[in-house]
Length: 286
Image 1 (cartoon, helix red, strand yellow):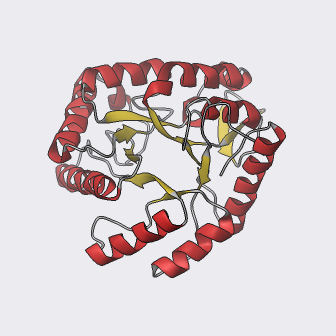
Image 2 (cartoon, rainbow, N blue to C red):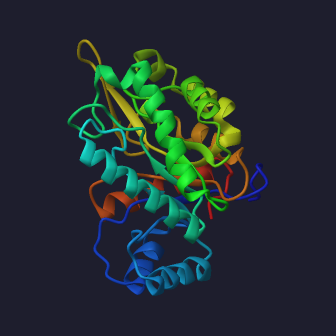
């Protein structure tokens, strides 16, 4: 089944089982039927470790989709901010060295919780800080093989496709791109009720810049005033087939990752579901 987008999508996710070497890691990857992988090591790995993992990635025709940074480089705690900024730079350098599709982080938060919701997340001063911080991270590495990306969040920049487009324009770096997590931006009942239309908007506006994608589902509870929660693909109301058709349109080797699951078995279930939907929709995931 040839993909209409001219290539084949890739699927991956977390592992949630321990491994101490590439042999153990690749056994899990193969069992989970992943064709895309998250970086299995940190920036402080030895050259030999990096080489060994890369050899397996190439041998088994995998795509390294994401290197996570997951720190708060705009923290109100100056020491934490400096440490986080340094970590982001090192993880971006790791992504560059290993040829990952992208290094991904969130913009950060101006409060005690690194990913929390605070009024100051949306001030003009903090927006300027975010832009300057992203520029500093990218300029410190000057990547040629990868991109620095910001995962959208419900309560910080960017929280909509238009906000992401504006951030791309303001950062003004060719190595700054998009990591798409559409579920994180379903932060309003209308977006929830019209999720397919909203997801189409995300791909229509951000498609040329997307380097990797999180595929999740969502449920809204029948409570007041509003409670929207993410869940495993197939356990909510999002049309997974529609999502995959949007992903397919991006072309060859688009990486799609399930995330935030608690166990190895849940990751296996989620990936199996996504593959079944793709087959039903006459699409191919390697």
